[in-house]
Amino acid sequence: MPDSKAITYASYLQLDALLGLQQPQSQEHDELLFIVIHQVYELWFKQQLHELRGVRAALLADDAPRALAGLDRVLTILKTLVAQVDVLETMTPLSFAAFRARLQASSGFQSLQFRMIETVLGHKRIAVREAHAVGSAERSALDKLFADPSLYDAFLRWLAVRGVAIPAAALSRDPALATMADVGVQDALLQVYRERPLEAQLCERLVDLDEGLQEWRYRHVKMVERTIGFKAGTGGSAGAAYLRETLFRPLFEDLWAIRTRL
Image 1: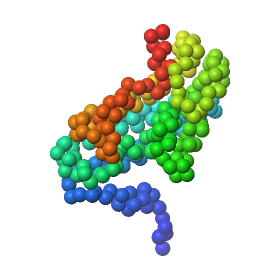
Image 2: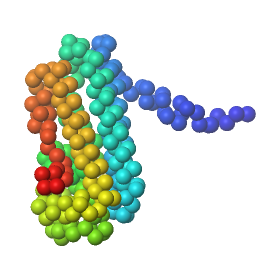
Image 3: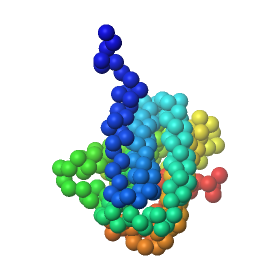
Image 4: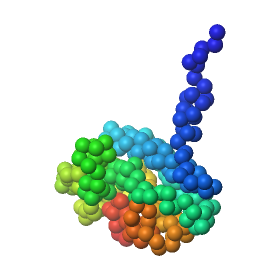
């Protein structure tokens, strides 16, 4: 007799559960697209967090090839996230307006996983952490990320292990604080670019990551402006006005600051 518990395509991917997760709150045709796009975003965020943690671990273990491979994958995922905006923009403003009220207080601003990505990368904001109740699963997840070194912290430690003169203060900084520009670190990075090809390659991958994230933010802003103009966002957020404030804010300021000195 065939094994009734044999793994199939549907069972391995949990398709019954997955395809049952789309629950439109209206009869509007485009609401399903809106839900699918955002659920797919969250799945890609989950994968990005997995990869970024892997990159951080690789750097702390002095495994440059694995770190570079992980960053390449994250960059490819970012390109996919940007491309998905094209699909969402096939929905007209009138189509979105037809079901927008059904979203009530929900907003993309509430995406915990995206805030976790920012935190892993070093953009650690107390307000984001304190938006969640102490003891909640969300707060616990953020608390752990605040206590751990960011990916950028791991990058500086990796450079120091490889003999780059990273200032001691940058290596011993409180991991709970947001990454800040440091002239001493910039001096060390200039040496890296001039004398250390492998380390410089990893620097450039981090710049690619920073730029890719800014590109996704830009496409997100324009998509919101195209769909709702300058109305307040769902959930009471400032909508496009808030998103505009996030543009052109690099995560790795040191890697951008040295451009004018090279």
